[in-house]
Amino acid sequence: MSFTVAIVGRPNVGKSTLFNRLVGKKLALVDDTPGVTRDRRPGDAKLIDLRFRIVDTAGLEEAGPETLQGRMRAQTEAAIDEADLSLFVVDAKTGLTPVDQALAGMLRRRGKPVVLVANKSEARGSDAGFYDAFTLGLGEPVPISAEHGEGMLDLRDAIVEAIGEEKAFPESDEEAETNVDVRLPGGEGEGDEEDAEPAYDETKPLRVAIVGRPNAGKSTLINRFLGEDRLLTGPEAGITRDSISVEWDWRGRTIKMFDTAGMRRKARVQEKLEKLSVADALRAIRFAETVVIVFDATIPFEKQDLQIVDLVIREGRAAVLAFNKWDLVEDVQATLADLREKTERLLPQARGIRAVPISGQTGYGLDKLMQNIIETDRVWNKRISTAKLNRWLDGVQVQHPPPAVSGRRVRLKYMTQVKTRPPAFMISCTRPEALPESYVRYLVNGLRNDFQMPGVPIRVHFRAGENPFEGRKKKR
Image 1 (cartoon, rainbow, N blue to C red):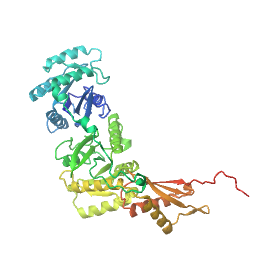
Image 2: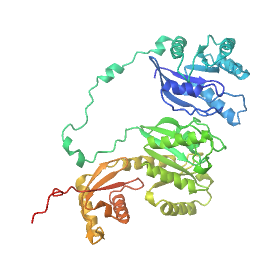
Image 3: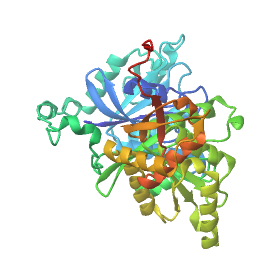
Image 4: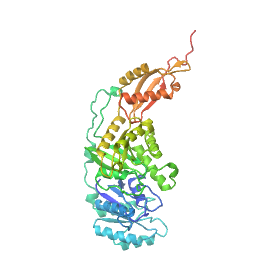
C-alpha cells in the first residue's frame, strides 16, 4: 500500500462505519453503543482509484493513563504517529463538543496532514454542525455519510490534496509482476496426484486464531509474540471485542494471528454487543488454519473450555492447547501430571492433541508453542497415498474384522483420501449404514496412531460400491 490513514475522533461519530465502507466489508463491529472499538484494526482500503492502508481506532476520550479509556487513548495516539494522514471524523448531526476541540488541538500539534470529515451530513439539521467544524482550524470539512456512501468522491479528492499526488499514486511494478510466468514444479505426472504425498510448504503464510474464555491472557500472549503493546490489555475481563489480525515473522515464515473476544457460556451472553463479538470470534475460527485454545492454568478445564475445544474440532480446525499463566503455578510437576490426565480423559475426540504450558507475561514456552503450531498444521495438511491406505485397510480388517450385522458381514473394499485440511477419507464398502459407530472409532484411532496424525480432526465417510447387476432380472 502507498500510504497509511488513521481514522480518529470521539466515540460514536461513525469511525467504524466509515472503515467498513472503505474496506468494502463489515470487518469492524458497529453498534449504537459508544466506545465499541477498543483496539487498532488495520485494513486495505479502496476509494475510487486510491489504494491505501486504513486503521480504525478507538474513540478518543480524556482519561488517566492507568484507566481502560486511557490505555485505549494510547493505542489511538500510536496509530496517529504511525500513519501518514489522519481522517478526523466529527458528527455533523450533534455538532461539536469540547472533546472535538481538544482532539483538534492534539492533531495540530502532531504536524501531520489531517482531513476533517463531517459524518452524518445527510441528517436533517446537520448544516449547523457542518459549519461549526470550520472553527476547528483544520481546513474545510468534507461532508459525507458513511452509512449511505455519500460524499466519497469529495473525500477522495481531499485525501489526494492532503497527502500529495506523488504519494497517493506511486509508480508500481504490478504490471510487470503480472507477466511473470509461474509454473508448477514437476510438470509431468499429473495423473499421479492421487497417489502423491506432497511435501509440506514451510514458507506458506499461516493463519492462527487465539481463542479462549475472557481474561485468559490472549491479547497479552500476542503482544509478547510481537514484542510490543500492539493490543489493548489489562486486568479487566472482556477488553477485546473485535477480532484483530496482526502479522509477524517467525523463523522466516509469515504468521497472521487473530486475537478474538473471550467466549463465555451461551446462556450468559445477553447483550447485543457481546453477541456480535462472539460471532466475530467464531468467524475467525472458521477462517483460521490452526486455532490455539488458551486455558488459564490456575483454573483449567472449565466447562466452557471443553465446549470451545469441541467447537474447534467440529469446525475441522487444527487445535493446540496453551496453558497460560504458568508463572503462577506453584507445584509444576504435579500440575503437569494432572493436566495430562485431564486432557486425555476429557478430550477423547481430540486424542493426542498438543498442549504447551506458557506464560504470556514472561514469554516462557512461546517458542515451543510455535513449534507445536507448525507441527499440528503439518499434520492437518497431510496426504497419504492410496496404496498405503489400502494396505493399511487390509491389515486392520485382518486384525479386527468388521462385525456381522443381521447375519451378514460388512466388507470394506477400497479406501482413498479425498481431501486434507482436515484429513478426510472415503471407504467403499457393502452396507455402510450397518457399520456400527464403534468400528468407525476403531478405524479413526487406527489412522491417527499408524499414520502419526495426533490431535487433528479425522473424517471417515462410507459409500456403497456400485453393483453392475443391480436392476437386472435374475435368470433362471
